[in-house]
Image 1: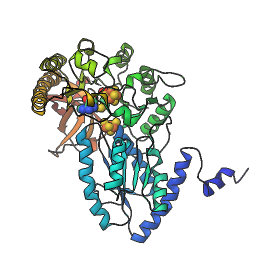
Image 2: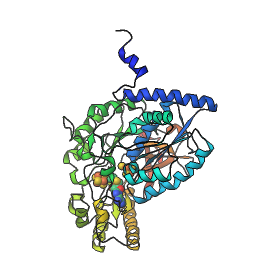
Image 3: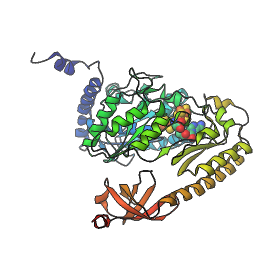
Image 4: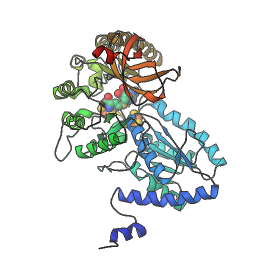
Length: 477
Ligand code: SAH
Ligand code: SF4
Ligand code: F3S
């Protein structure tokens, strides 16, 4: 019973089970990387460039965790020994930006022969992009997709051993690998995946094709991950999924999103819970009630509208109408203009909802046709100049509404989680209210990661100026 079989297989053969197999490869690559570092007489560095949404940002933290365990150190520059582009394909210009930068990387590689370049993320799930990299960007060393990021160490090992380009793309997966290391960007807040993929197939959207079918993590795995984060200093979590309202439906023992929230809210030391993105078609009363009940859940919902025209919403396959969209809470949103067939009247409907809802803020997008999605072959493309005019009109309607809403809390003292030193004025710090609005106030480095009571003295449209409240204690006495 002393020297176990598993000890021995660890040395000779890679284990079959995950995550053990990946830890095995992390150790092997660590040895190979240490040899390179010794030969070069310096530490090896890595750089990850993340394009796209918070899912990708969280994936990058997992990639960073693996690389740090292998012995690479993070650096801000792309002139480094291991560069990863974690790509997004939600709109056309996202794809173009990647290729623009990739060209430059090849020059760095000529100057540093031990440099490796990896490409991953949503764009890599599109076969045309893989062809393009194979043909035109042959200096790329490793290519993988959205379903197998946990395998980075194994892919690096293959690349280092064979000297050949390694391309590993899976069309689909039903597995979720837990307990892969990760390295957070912020010490005090973190994204947490609660589910992967999407089953909604909105007619404009490529995400279901590049992220696969919806799968939820087990509540106990999510809670265990958050407990560990809290022990490590995290105060705020952002629960991530493409449609968090349908969380838990595919689990062996189904659990609702509201039930998950209740479970997470019981974690001692966790102060704030956010989530994105809920889908308007199934925003449940249970969820709104749970938010009202539990103070740790932030007073903010990002609820993408996409269009205010019920006709266009139908063509978009969104399953709700102009009338059923508006709940009575503070919301931010996403809106697309220029969807095929969008008339002036449809656009007026969108403006109408924007004016009534007075969104706290909105991400606005010009429709971008994505090959393979139903909308890409719909008739009546909207000319660029019309889209541009509508886009500008939408922006001003959004900012008028936001100004009205942001002003509402002037004079109040509210808790702010401080995130960073203000980029423009180093005497200020910047943080967020529970409802996600930014607040700038006088303070220093020591406040980062702290929750501070701040009196909101002035509204600036999308954000507040405030003062740390030093009088609270005295007033109480
Ligand atoms: N799951 C989320 C959104 C994920 S994509 C939801 O359903 O709300 C983020 C945003 O990108 C979308 O809300 C949409 O506004 C925008 N978007 C997606 N596909 C697009 C396309 N083809 N053209 C323009 N904007 C798009
Ligand atoms: Fe795309 Fe719709 Fe899924 Fe959101 S819900 S990721 S917009 S298909
Ligand atoms: Fe982009 Fe993929 Fe997110 S396409 S928006 S990175 S899910």
